Image 1 (cartoon, rainbow, N blue to C red):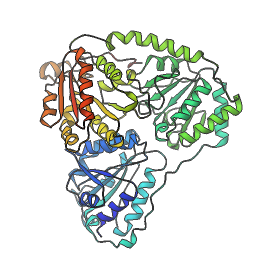
Image 2: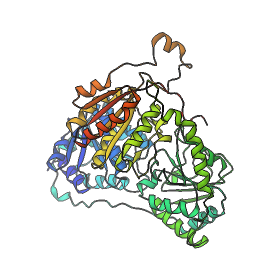
Image 3: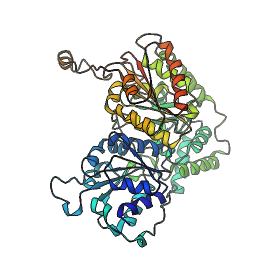
Image 4: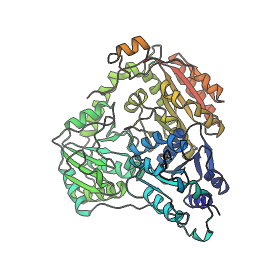
Length: 548
């Protein structure tokens, strides 16, 4: 058999059922022979984005895979990988490369060297006999510790070389998890019970560990309000009486209020990284941090109590220890925190209702988000935003009520990322409505891959908020560039682009037509066809607590 056939067989053993690619790479044919569906994209970045969305929605239990042709294919995928790395998403990248005898000869591109800054592990299969060993290493990296992209470079002569089938004594890699040190757990539980105003700061690790039930039980035991990170959004139901919402570049009133008054912050499944796309925690608070990556401990904050371990196992330990120290009911009878959350949330939402329910034209984007949330079945949907204004407008106000019902992402924020994410979400959960909300500039980056969704029968709903501008572009900072050369504004009819690509489309200009258009699009998607709604919106520069 050929090297490509050996790799494809191992992928099949590891449960891979599809692989993103752009020809030409012989692994595409080998995968098809092995029963792995190759999905062809218009550009590599969107294919990586799909693999990303697939891995997220399966909580890393199944891995999204993308392979690239040697040279330009491997080069073009970089942006998507960088975003997946920033957001800690486990995807497997299998780029082809030049034959081994050309290694190090300029201008030969080496993926394993060039991608090391945006992958957890990056290596090359240097001998054809090492295919099983190197694939085992790759999947071990994907299934242990902090999730992240993993890259295994395959030289072209390895793909096309002959290998004896006897080397394929391969056994799939199992997920490895670790629990917290018992003394660390006891100390953390004692500190949590001693706190008068604790706040739980939940990250994406809760989702990967599928620990949402344990998180909910602990919050209710302590009667501690819960906020999530952007990538952790949906780890805690945002309609719960103790939910503060998401702490991101734009955040909720309750997050700001409770973080300000907290005397203890407990981070679970998060990195506590200082970033523009999160909220800063003021000094003077007791800090407890539980993560599966020792590199995060004491990175940006001085930590009083650290617990290394899987979020589900650690939360299970903490729940039991809290019961041991405070009794089986903990503090469940204390309803004051929930009452305070309700009061602060009501006051905050009251300030925003004029925008969320606005009848103005062009349509206010907040009206679109509010109508979307109240029109779809959120328990049977996966919704995601794009970067820029859609992210900052959606994350505070779109309430996620089921795990992975919302994909929040940030830190690197590649424009156009949401299209591939929605496609990957639909591949992972075909029974759910997959929706991505993006701006006109983002659509301009990746819009032709609507045709991929049509061709590959991946029915998603794309909502383009078209304000004919780069909404977060500050004209006051660049007055000459904009006035003289028009650097802020754009033009285009994106519904017509979707029509040309074979998808259902509507252009919506009246606020009262938003809900009916979404309902029609839902029916189209349910029939198996992708749909795009281009909604003409005003430029909205007000954001909830963005400048804290």
